[in-house]
Length: 179
Length: 179
Image (cartoon, rainbow over all chains, first blue to last red; front, side, top):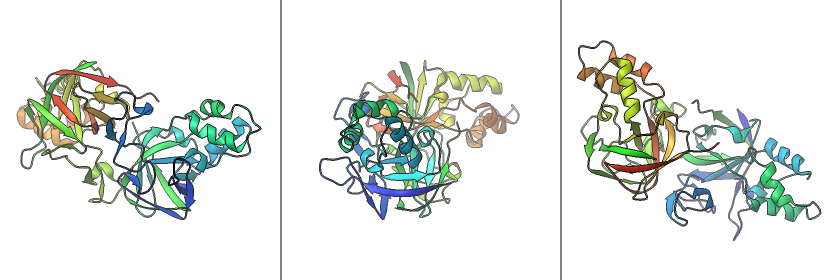
């Protein structure tokens, strides 16, 4: 069991930065209106086994981070905080240690019946580091240091397995995939 | 790199048993006409975290087995062979040891451009054991023994990540997910 502390959407023009909402409605493909919404996506650098731009199934529908891991990365970088918005997070949880280590195939279940299927670690890239840098202009090299220090604690990507509402507070149940 | 040795479809009434075809056309959701085709499915015993019958995303679109693992299970059961048809397999490969241990998130890529995304071990249940038993009526307790001896070598389930044709012979490339 863990707690949801925020839900967010990436619906601002030309930005992956998210903003908090009272609730989000997840459906097959993600959150309607979010920049990562869709049952398919274009292959990018993270799917380099396909030609760039190829239409493929979208397994990066929802981004989940934990308060604890955000705090740990902030501490490692020497900054007061890293807000989930800056990471483009859609769901923030608290009380599940090592969220990023959650095995692929695990589920996060919500009281509405909504269920997310873990598709693995969201490997850190420079873009959130750039956003973090913009908030702390006096701290050096945050973009590159983010990529290094956020390994294995930048959260996970998920597919929507069962549609439903996720509210900005409430419980969630984690069902760990057993190999 | 491994080799495809058969492709098959489950299109016979009231049976999960598959039959070989010269090629299959995989698209989002699986193989049209196959009993497991669909972007969604009804939750069953394998998805006991959801109420039975709930519509959920279908991560069991395609079943892949290996010749080597089929042979190993046959040997363990003391029968001459276990045909992929009896396991409801859609794709059979040879030359990739321990297919069932392939980590979730790995890809199997085909010359047409088609790509399958591994969603984990296909945990053995009694139904294929019953089919095996029907082919070897003189060997005792095959149904139950199949469940025991097919653990970790009954193959994997996959999502279609990129549509395309998979032919009954040819090469395939495995991209192992790195944690």
